[in-house]
Image (cartoon, helix red, strand yellow):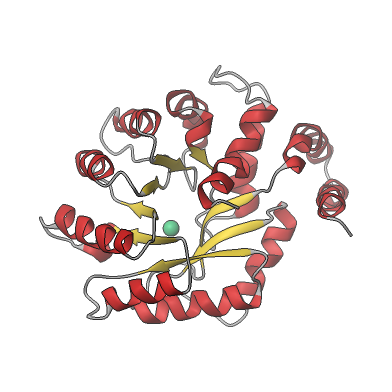
Length: 286
Ligand SMILES: [Zn+2]
């Protein structure tokens, strides 16, 4: 079965499992809207091999089941809430089981004495990126400098993509400018804890070639506006699974091809294609 055929059969499967009239109507609309994305890969930019630090036997197979249901071809995967070595071992194991479905990213915590050698191992495995979280870098005032140290060390080893949860726009502005050889992906469409802050993240992505935003667990009602601010070429579909759900997160984007109560323009087929996988495929050089 070709890839094209597989995608069509997934959509048919989804349409056939929608039981209610509303479900059928939505599935029909999505089928016709989603058709152009069959041209490109659908890639989830953010998938954990854990659910908030909890892992169980079979979790990785369950992710594949969700990817098949949602029509997701590939996912950027990592483990984060465990020590550096243990995280990367689990990611490696999952990747080895499903090498065609997963794109592995490494993970380090600065509190682990082996974080530098883990970065080296990640580069030797030829993984293209790492996932970092601010609370695992530093909870103190040295967050910026410690982040800089880790990212510069990663870049030294040839790791050039950093997916980073860091809720400080000033730090992100400075580091993305100063470490320009790295592609920075900021999850959750940026952060909006202070009024108007999300717009700043969107503008950072718009203005800086090496900055992107992922959509995971974002507030759906702000997506249309955020995409307008940042530009569809700077937005990456992501689920933040296995806590976040690939089908739900993907639908939150696809539905923007229909009229919205927020009066933002409908996403074009081309924009949808870029967000669901085109942008990330380009970054990952797939
Ligand atoms: Zn996450």
